[in-house]
Length: 367
Image (cartoon, rainbow, N blue to C red):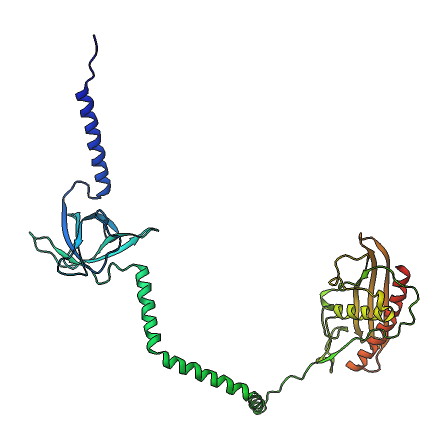
């Protein structure tokens, strides 16, 4: 005996499940649920881009209903009519403000209601009038703003052109009368008692000019990198021991920072000895067979014992593998005839010349 399936019961269960799903979805989409609803007419003047039937209706940012009907106004080409259904407990008034808001990254439009104090009459469907430009998006607002800016520029193009021309004439006049302006500024400084700072005087260190005839020739590729020094020696000022200011030296300065100046004059001294086999700067070539590394220990004027110009350099010759081939400390000094920049430069030149001669002889023998 075959068992008949209860098709009627199964069909009823499936139908009930479908109705329950539809009811649940309807309840989710309508925050008022199945409670009492109230409908309102909304009139928009202008376009409402992206607004669809079923779009949410917000009151003070809270969802209270949805759009149930949307269409064009027959007697107004720019008008749009909409019908919204909201929960009856929503405090909508005759003067409630209506607008569009765009939510999320995609800019989904929703009808936004806000405020209101006038009570509507019973028995009729209230009509709410949206604010002018309520449907205008950010893109359209930017276009309108740019259009207004363009209109202002177009209307005042002549005045702007004249203003730019006047600036050009003014700048050309300033350029032609730079000398007169400098004289006016100088006159004002004299009137106010201000004095211009004295100009800086630059002094150079002289390389060894006559190192003698080249004896042994250096048949290797070598270089003198920029010497190392403590921060105090990375300067163009004249240094003193003990450190203090002396008259006449405030405006005096070396032609370059001391390590770079010493490097340049040592290379020039070796070039005067043998230009064909002179050292290079490390910036001139990548890898060399040997390097003469210099560390500046002293380059100062010792006042307590003279005054005396003192120079102290430590030198090391290393090969391309970093092995020290030879090392030596070079020190020399020269007394100053008097404590002024010219005498100081002459003393430094004398001491440096003797030191460069000794360094050339030592380097030639080591290499």
